[in-house]
Amino acid sequence: MSSTDVCPRILVIASGNAGKVREFRNLLAYLPLQLQSQPEGLQVDETGTTFAANARLKALAVARCSGQWALADDSGLSVTALGGAPGVHSARYAASDPERIARLLRELGDADDRSAQFCAALCVAAPDGEVLLEVEGRCNGWITTAPRGDGGFGYDPVFEVGDTSVTFAEMTLEQKRLEGHRGRAFALLEPQLQKLLLL
Ligand code: IMP
Image (cartoon, rainbow, N blue to C red; front, side, top):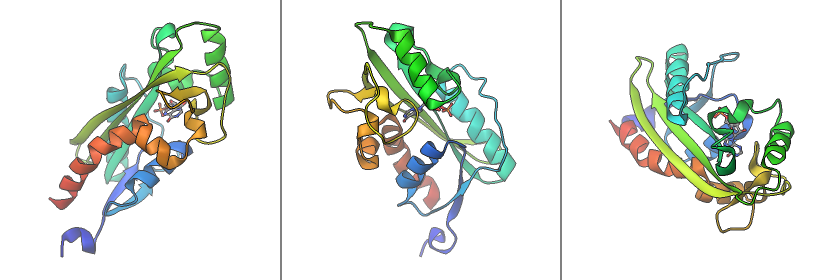
């Protein structure tokens, strides 16, 4: 019997975003982990200029504050015709999801080039300040001219995935896991996390 059978490792999901937390709970369900939410009211300033730098800041801050391993994700949407915006500012592009989508569609107007990319950087950090794991996943697609679908969160209704002709918001959680940036990043993280848990 391994030590993980007796006492599963606690992993704090370093996010206050309910959509992300739901996706992570789904992705992590098969690992021997006891998942916890991040401490109430904790706000980490995302001062990094890359997704990876911000994921690292969040994982380190939450690990330090909770005294447990923490998993953070920094993610966002980069639109080619907008010079990569909103990028690392995706969450702060406007006050709410519908307003963020409205601003994106307004700024893109009737641009011919509607190509875009979602990126998710994941980081697992320990309370002593050690960065245990870092990975990135990407998903290419197109910005639609109008929102489609009821699922997901954030920019999901206006992001059509590669050659699937459906938006993230029209996919099931399982489909999004297979096609999406976070699922792809997680596919890289999972075997490494498994290994760490066995140490
Ligand atoms: P942050 O990683 O917490 O800074 O937030 C990233 C922001 O990017 C989210 O608030 C969403 O607006 C957007 N975002 C990240 N991942 C997704 C996704 O899978 N679907 C839709 N929007 C996303």
